Length: 148
Image: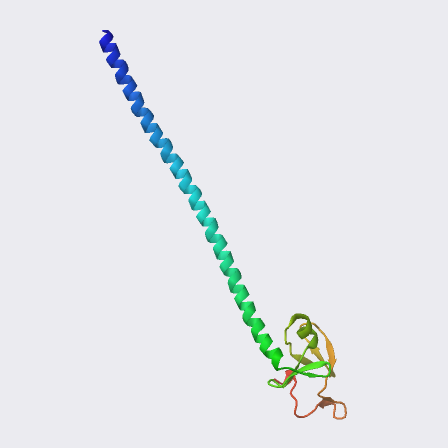
């Protein structure tokens, strides 16, 4: 009987060992799943960061294009008194915007006072060099932004 009891104990121990191995596999599987989930989360964070970086790159490329265009316009301007004049467009540009933010903003005739030209961006006012007080109108040969 001791022999049967020994076999029974060995059989029970073997079953317990098998169950422990199964539990170990389950635990290892759960740990692996947790690691995979952590890696997937990290990958998602990396994709989000990459997307944000790509958006910033596009914004900067657009800004570079705008600055190059403004630079080309500013390079062709001629200083006429306090104003800048664009001979290609035959229009005056705002010196305040050019000097402060490097943007060549077209000056527009003030509809309430034709002897003034104004910048719609910075609201600076200047004497309209094309205004002829004797004729009370814009001198011939010059276009105002309002006429375009």
